[in-house]
View 1 (cartoon, rainbow, N blue to C red):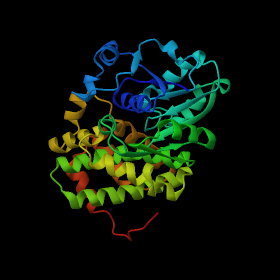
View 2: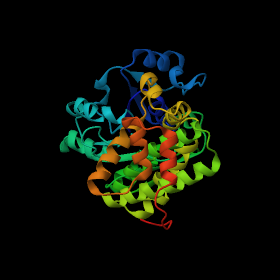
View 3: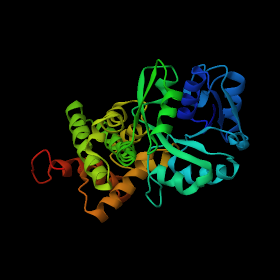
Length: 333
């Protein structure tokens, strides 16, 4: 089994180390020579993991030709880069390959799910199937081998099981699933809800408020996902409520951190002027808000985050608007 991980960031490094622990032949491809050198020479990825020493057998390269002959190619890059990466590797693949998606979000222009983007840009003769490896996980914990559970979601049950068996070990448990729509929608929308969670914390709100946000955010996620064709029960699992909880509450979450800065300054201006990191929740809020508007799906939390991010609304006023909405029964899918 030969696996190539595309992306030398935190999650790509963490998952590649899982494979090293499982004695799988794995190489990371990245376009940052400094990160690649750090992995190969120092057994670290200092940009993301401070003083963590990574597996001594892990190797990395800046040569994209490494994907030739791969049985599995895992894409661990921002959603905005998935299309271009697929176009880059497609002519290099020389057999049916399982392409594993580890990104959570939608195409920035077409708003398509990542599995759809991959299938559109990897030719049939090179693609066995798409498997999304997603769920409640932070690379900062996986890289130090903390207990974690995620899902291998695919329309191809056999390939999902191959990915499950390849990545599972004593600290990473992988379940399989086949609700591609529901799972991909869940792990994307939770990013926008996590921005909202950070905003509320930055404004000074506490546990009561966060519990309300997560619960109502789950309702929005489920409502939207079902409208897209996902199954209701999926949102009660790891790619739904599980990923929502971890992203809305963790200090490791870039989406939560971004929201916190916005809330602290009661404006998105500071974020736009100073942010240098990939914050998937920002693009997700735009995609979901615009799609929900067209389809008539009620998404009040996501819509308020959209107004804060893209229309200059004050977060404190957005919070008030959510509380002053028309009163209704709780379960309103």
